[in-house]
Image 1 (cartoon, rainbow, N blue to C red):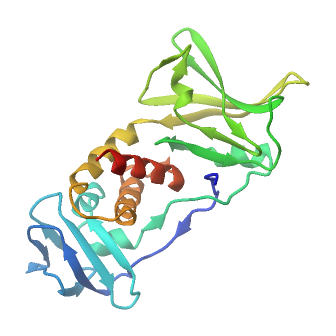
Image 2: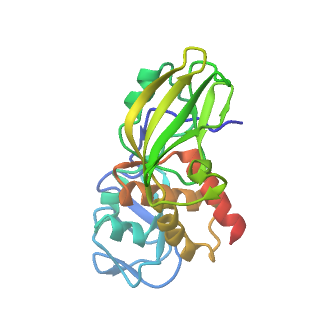
Length: 258
């Protein structure tokens, strides 16, 4: 099944501010809430000030009112300069996933207004057919050369993947890539610019790998690792778009290689 991009971001507060929460699990060491040492089964307020022994600790909690379970890496609190669970959970959002369709070039242009993190592959679904006579391409400058890269497509969808870094069969990986996204119609010999300036970021991949690595030796499920990774990405890269399906591909790849 194709991994499709949705335009809408789904916002969800997992635990409400001031809610009583219970500790389900702490991976190691001691964690404090308002100077009280937390143990499995301890109940405390999400507004309590949290302190810890080291930045690799993880707390798994459940809200008394919401009954929602959340897994909170201390590293995410540090990254966001947060001191309470409420500060993190009040802003928790799930990343966008499949289902959105760009029905015209204008809607696609309106969406591509900020940086995109490319972890693996991102599919964009359009409202019109793509073929050898109608396709999208990226244009960017490398040194004194202008590179045009036709993007892979399938039916109504086109994608971004690491092929955009391959030039004359040689792969290179810049930290960021400033590109123009264009749509080409062969018969009309017409190129339409969708966006003049789109930044594709590659460095989040290595940063996210470094974030995940300490947790791979512990028995976390893929869903738990994904939850930790999603929250970390939103806090570490607030101005960068992450596609959830792309992040899931990255997470699966990391798990297969651990």
